[in-house]
Length: 352
Image 1 (cartoon, rainbow, N blue to C red):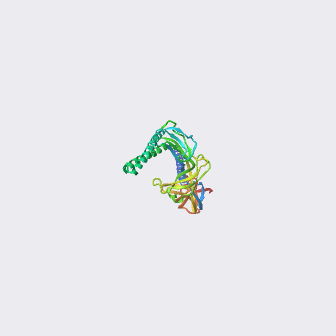
Image 2 (cartoon, one colour):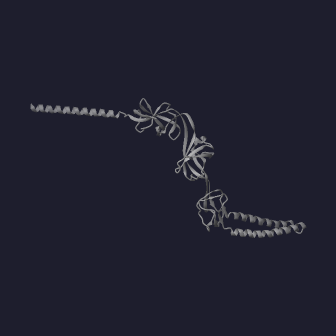
Image 3 (cartoon, rainbow, N blue to C red):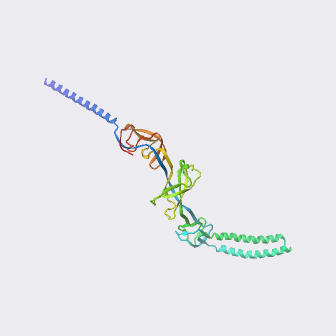
């Protein structure tokens, strides 16, 4: 009897334990399900859209080039006999820079001058005989032609003589010379570089969509890594056609450089104010979410986040124009975009 009661008690205890375990398991499942279906509240900063008056600007990268720049070379094969420049110094237009050996050319010219005098005397005598009928017209023409040929040969040699003097084609600053006196030069050898940086050119490209927003006389500003202040420049020329490979338009602006702070060959960051748009919807670029389909934003509606696809327009540094997708008065999510999902509950911490 006691044994039967003991067994019965054990069975009751086992049943109670199993019941408790089943309750815990069911309760745990319910808690797991509830946790998975709960969207946590996400703290965010928001932006309320409105009609905006905006000066939109375009930023791009350009290159500074000298106003004029040339490589000084010789047109003939000659030996340098004299150098009249100082490296890094300023030179005037037509200033003599290099003198090449001209001894043989001068000798030929002197020889021809003597022959010309003789030919001129012969021509005078033949002309007297022609008037008296002592010689034919053909004979006189031969003597006269010899005289004129000698004069032409002298002019040819004078051209070669002028090439022995290498002069500056424009005023500017001379660079480092690559030759010394006694060097045998040829047309392919660069003797030195001459650069005019009294003003500089800024070449840059803009997308084709802005081709009608820029014109000759437009003002731009640019900055460099070695100058703290922005520098103003005026558009001087625009390519008449868009580059079909890059779909960009090449623009050239000019800036004064009297203090020579701007260095040719360096890169610059160009800022171009294209115009003013009024009564347009602009939002901070930080609100945009890129995807394969395009751009979208999260709009706060009834406390929940709702994704909306948008169509964008022109863009400035911090703002972008919205053409379709949202309207004035919508509240956009700016921060915590990685945590926000569709219908996530939102807690607005700040409105910009």
